Image (cartoon, rainbow, N blue to C red; front, side):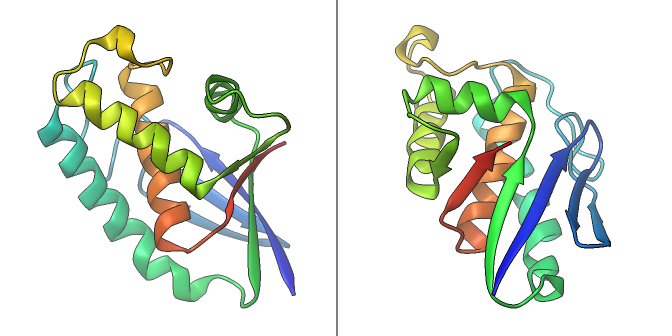
Length: 147
């Protein structure tokens, strides 16, 4: 059975919606359960702290999700921007392509010139990328669709 889940990442929370259910996670593009970015581009320490908070929010939630294949969707313009920056035809980005984008962000965090990536390097885009990367990775999803 295929389960369509809508992901809405707001400033201070992320909302997962499917059928009539909603799950609210305490992670958003400006606040990860109390932790906020102070730099743009973000630092390695900030990325690690954000990832820890994201994992603490999403890993326990996986068992609350419906059984069967999960198809994740988001109407966030940052997802569309990510898809365009990867030169993808269509509106679906794979977990592997998200991982490639994440690795580009890590390179910038670790000192590569900002112009070495086509990705936005502001903290909100970085937060969005970290959240979808961790969700698709830890929930073993094929990717995410922009709708």
